[in-house]
Amino acid sequence: MTHTKENLLNQIEECRNNMVTLAAENPLSSLTVVRVSSELDGLLNEYEKFFSI
Image 1 (cartoon, rainbow, N blue to C red):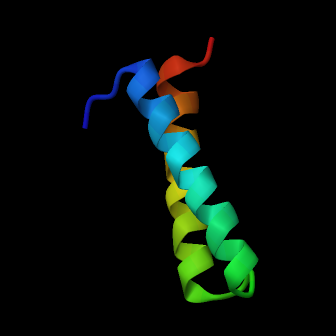
Image 2 (cartoon, one colour):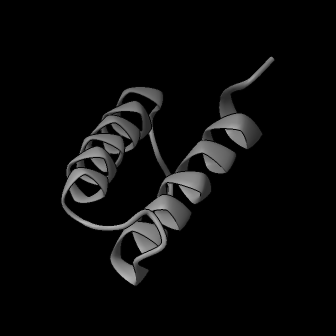
């Protein structure tokens, strides 16, 4: 999937906010929190790959 920098940053922020909310309501080791954390890791890796100098 092709991302613009702004689009990817928005996805990262949305995923981060989702993870913080879920982590406040669930144990950090819950499958839900781990799944969203993994998704965030993937987005951050994608950002690093395409937009870092």
